[in-house]
Image 1 (cartoon, rainbow, N blue to C red):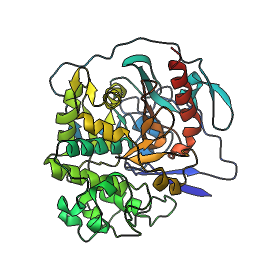
Image 2: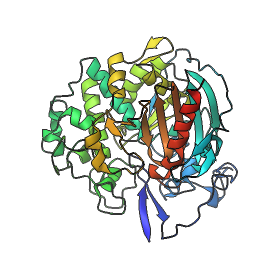
Image 3: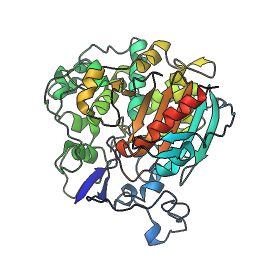
Image 4: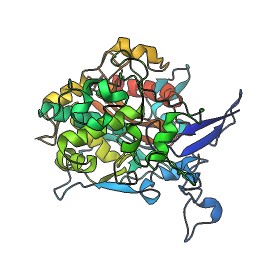
Length: 434
């Protein structure tokens, strides 16, 4: 039986088809699917069987994804996030051998931290401890200077920008959505508050069931140009055109329901409240102040509107700078980047009772707030998460930030979590011994 998986429970959403059965087929390992070793997109032109394209779906099908996730800009339109003309902020280095740390996976297997990257098709992995880089490795098409698609980690950036605007007095979380986006008055969001959008407790008829060809996620994808529009297509042509069509289903504020439409609505609110595009706002308020090493970029729709649900691409080091800033209460490299109150709001966690009905088997007891995922563990760890294995994992008590880019064959993080989450916890425990 076949199941359709979309390239973004967040955003890229060009379709990928992976065969599933009672006994799933054995997929190539990370080493066997390495795009560099397999000479994918090498040559002028590359051989026909080594070409990856957006239009024919090869960029969204494994193993083509292992090259595509590090080369989004060559495939679709983007908007640049300028790093500014200031100095690059330092990332002090204190390398440590952490590959040997023992890890027990969720299904009881004994591995080491060093086994985790290959088991989860990692493209890049960097660990900060007390602000110092103790580990940085790249695999496949991953390189230190090459931006990688962050998928739904993007949502946490948008949530952080919203929290920043709240702290600056430019956005009222208790206000109705229509205060900022009156165009949504006849949509599902017409009687919702900004806070409900930020915490994804919205009752909206929007399915991300990728096995249903009529699911709204595909309408979203076609509208945003994340999925090719078929000949004669007459549906919405932009994210904005799509969002106003969404209808209410259920009540707002009752339970958490992860739906990318909420992130796109929040992105729209953030743009209206700030009077800036996402790319310009992120550049001016965060990227330049961080002393980012490289420009970042967003995927955009046909009128240049950025995908706030999953379109951000950054280098791993700059992702680490952002994570460390959040860990340090909004401060990085001696500079207050976002207000301390905004960082505190992001880090405080959400309502576990509202999260529980979502039924995430690998995330028991977690919560969701400001578009960040909260473990609610003893260390107060929280994370930004994107499909196929993208992550910022912040452990305040261990003074640790882990950032990871990946190109796992399966979209859902339930395929990564049994290995990665125990590995992160094991590393935190080891670092806290010192």
